[in-house]
Image 1 (cartoon, rainbow, N blue to C red):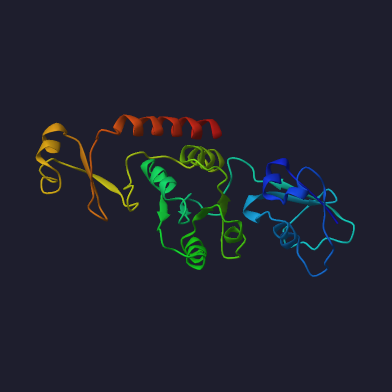
Image 2: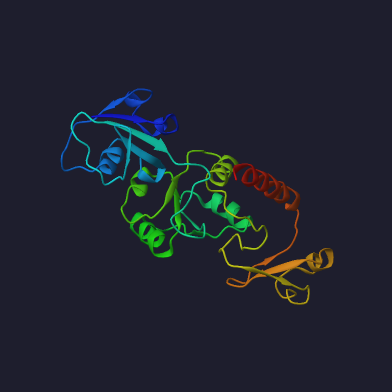
Length: 237
């Protein structure tokens, strides 16, 4: 069996298989999805599958000598549930805070193991973002994305251009993902220093954890992050 991967997927293959047709042994009991994942490409990264020119599901069992074409996911990617919500693994904490800054529903905990993450993604219908290909290959995971970039700015752009989620900046707590509600200086008097109350007149409080937010010294940098994010999503749609 010959398997041809879209160029966008070559980085997931073993070095010896990049840039060329891949020869795979025929196994009558193996589904096409199993074959693709055994070569290193999670099905979360795969779009259309074609066998000898015919589109087939990943449950298809190809015949000996078949030619398989594996496309990458379309962008922006359609999801199997109505609202784009995300779950990030333990290595993507800074990305989680950036997504929350943009008002994207983003679950994250720094001590979840793979079993818990896969179950949470399924139970809460979330897109699982990770750099662990094995985690994305788990049957429970309803949708996911392999995060390729190393730097947070590049990771954010990668995710936004792939999924183009609706943005609502400044509406979520970056610490816990809870919703923010406007608060007066009097409402937050017990939680902020007098100098802060005197210097600012715009506050918000997280309805879940109680954390207080205001436009601080880093606000201009955060504003730039928001503007860039909005432009990336607009161009992706």
